[in-house]
Length: 168
Image (cartoon, rainbow, N blue to C red; front, side, top):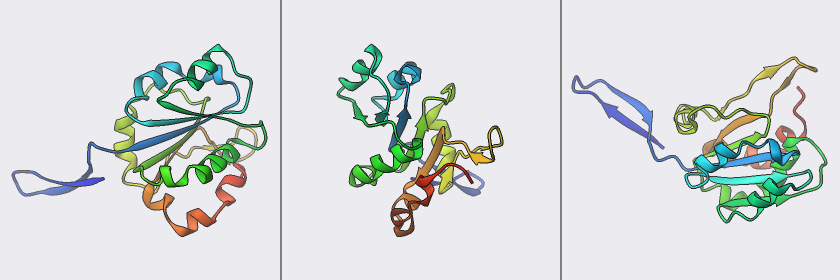
């Protein structure tokens, strides 16, 4: 997903190409907090998986019946990382075809250009971690981008420690 761009002065640099295939996995307890405008804006441009661990509202039913969204219902157990882990293992073959896999939850505010962010993230194996000391020191889990190079490694496939807990 990288391209080499050369200027007239023959200076060359690497940039992400414009065609980045993205899958986004949302883990939600309260489906009503999921940003509908974001879903509506991107649902025909990226593959969206919504994992619901809470009650289904009218909005949830709308998402559940949307043919452009893979809607997954599960028991509310474990952290968001558990929901992501189960989804990744269940849909691994399908997800491994994407350039970037975004793990998110409904606490993220999506007031940014997703594709611009993905183009920046294409340079990294993992992007978007935020250290928090709000409760205890931990990595926030509301927005993590995983590059397919990391996603497809045997170490990543074997490792479950990333998904076991979000506390360092």
